[in-house]
Length: 105
Length: 437
Image (cartoon, helix red, strand yellow):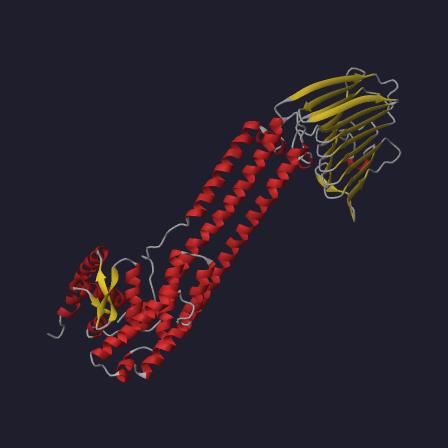
């Protein structure tokens, strides 16, 4: 998949997962690698960037005697996710157009 | 903890050396936590590690992301160099590496030019201010307006240079920022998926301008404006503008003086700045008509058989040594009656031009930057111009009726009129042209 496209999709996936509820690094990674082919270790820089862009924030909570860092989507993160959804809706129409018309069928 | 995981974390920690301490800790915490959570959910360490990129590569992505963010928030040479260092590791393809080299070469070149501009402008500012103050100190205290105006010009001129220096510096910020964005795009395009995530880009929010720098620029702008107002109020810039563009000064006083020809066998004229015109005619007396500018003093007296005219600065105009090299439009006209037969007429002007409208008198004319015009009688054949002319100029050209003439000598151009024995006219100019027509 095109690197540029993949990057946008990756951001959208992260925001979408967080919109459903706060979660932590490992869980987030598992969800995403189950969905698209990205390296398992590549998520940290993405999270860090989304955080500096203000789309998500972190907090720590105790889990089995140690601290675990959770990620939470912000208001502007939700806004960005909305933009992604609009863009992807258009992309979906194009994909349907390309894949729908089976020449042999 | 599993040894393989421990060694993974150690290698990562080693390669994150140079990252800001809190960022480094945050990254390491993330991966430690990641392993803890994975173990807790029953992952096999060997299998887990095989799904991860090597720690060197992860570190490179984190470092590049961080340094790109650094350039975005604080664009400067130091942060940009950091980015170049970390990004350098991220190129696999020859093409993207070549594009990267070209990009950083261009960025550094422009940055160096901007830096040189900054330094030169700052240096100019540092020179102009003390120079203008020292000029102002030379002005007699009886001209407070001139002193204030000179310092005002110095302050506003050096202020403008300081602002220019700041401008060059400020320009380098978007340059580094834009270049960082391009580096980011290159890393993503040339890389494998892991590099997808190298860092932030266009929409990074950190475009704070440094507050103290802004205040400094504002203060300099205010000081420059004050200097400019003082300078303009003094009228000095207008005066200098008129002089440097060889326009007539606004405030000249015309002074007339006449002498009998008897007992005046020699005339010696020196002007610092005023043009000299020698003509034939008048009332049978030697007459002087002098347009005196207010920053010049003059003295005219009869000294034995000689009439001596000298001109000098009264110290009122700053930068006089420079100003006097520009020709003035004010003039000194000397009219000699026809048939007057002096032993010698010497005319000297530092910056002014000398026009000799009659070749009936033995003249020695000398200028430093000014032109010398000699009117040769209209009926004279150029090959046999009657007066014995010797024209010499070090840097200028001798023109005879619109054509360059004269021999080139190691000392400049030299022309000798063909008929010695007549009236001798010697013309000498260091930098000006000599025109015979």
